Length: 285
Image (tube, rainbow, N blue to C red; front, side, top):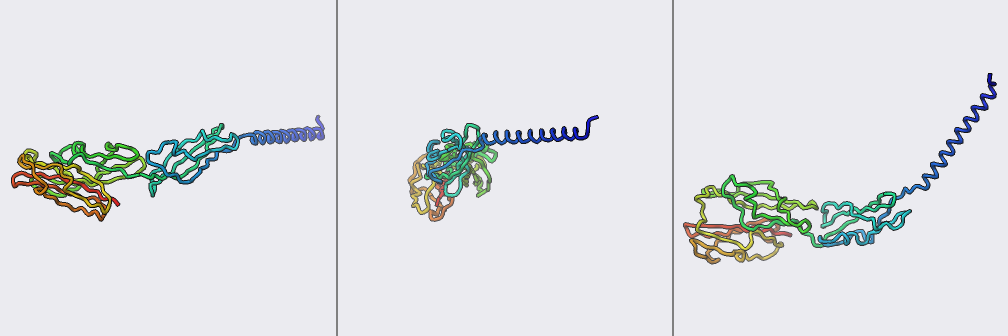
């Protein structure tokens, strides 16, 4: 039978062995931990706000941005633009940059970019908005309407109608007001109210022997601008005969002192035949 003292010695030896193994394990983990690269690259800017054109290249947006890593040194060549925020006040956006080291640690930083020549999305019209009947397809009605953006280019296929309202009615036609909207990739939204004339009876519509065409059907101008409304008439005729500006009725609610959307109506009428056209005027601040 093993003596009690011998058992005690064996237990102490085993305990010491366990403690020693724990110490050696801890030393090994600390050694590995101390050698492991835990730092991420640090991104710095020569300026916190950069001013650029809306057509600025990637190189221009990256100008003045550097990245360094505690272990790898200069890692500027790994820099990327991770994201850009929507448009903020003052035509500014936030750019998020990211840089990587050899152990794939990621460092990120943000700075502001301000566009020096930004303009909100704008609409344009090739001609008047008309419908041959109340059941006309919306795509057909809005065919003359387009939208462009200084950053995204053509946004015509992103135009949506958000509201409609009847503005007037006669025996021949109904005038509807469509509220259209378009949004660019910066999140900036443009809204416009446009008149649409819907013929109640396509077979009996007036204007068959009268015509009036404009050089523009939608214009933008700055508040305070003086407009020559007659200058937007391209041609007009009644019963096949051309008529001068003195025979064209011009009705307008335009107030260029106040930003807003206005309509100018041009009309010709000889008592039997008539035609009209609308010019939309958007007055900006």
